Image 1 (tube, rainbow, N blue to C red):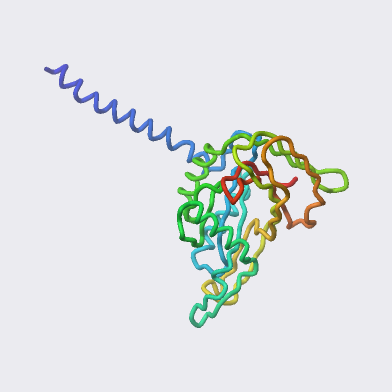
Image 2 (image 1 turned 90 degrees about the vertical axis):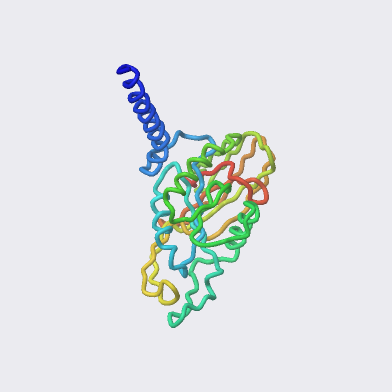
Length: 261
């Protein structure tokens, strides 16, 4: 009986140890991602994170600061889109503040994502990962989970390379198979801005924004196979940058992405 009692005591302890070990092993990838561990190199490029925000949104600055952290990561391509539906909101005596970077084009982009994801709700701050899923932009743990999940779901059918060409332009090479028609986009952005907000919900605050999208230009449609493009020189200036996105037609999942060199 003594031996039986000992087995009954030790077996649950072993199970608890196994459960704790399994939980730890499941937690490690997300923890590594949160700490900035580099992912394995991919022919299709870094994971794309889009933040939809507004300088008139009181709850947005933490998400904007978070995007600034993500923008430092080599395995992520972080972009900040400023929507315009906050621009006419009057916040009591503080009045209204028109976001300096807002555009109806980026509002439409967010609305298109909402329709594709079977949701009619758009809000700020919202992060869209890989064009597949959306989460609250200031919920760091959920953002990291979405990055890890959607990184694993990207179909590695496209190989995208962007290099600097003679004369300062860009040379773009795209190869691979396409499960569905896709569009190739040039996205230009300002790397950083600091703004003293004079009115609205964030009146008196100094906001720091990162990778603020200033323009999106469609370059080509892709149905698979080799494609080579020579582009003009990207915007000049130490604060200017650009990226190339390959996205399924009608704003579907991201298939490939690269920062411009």
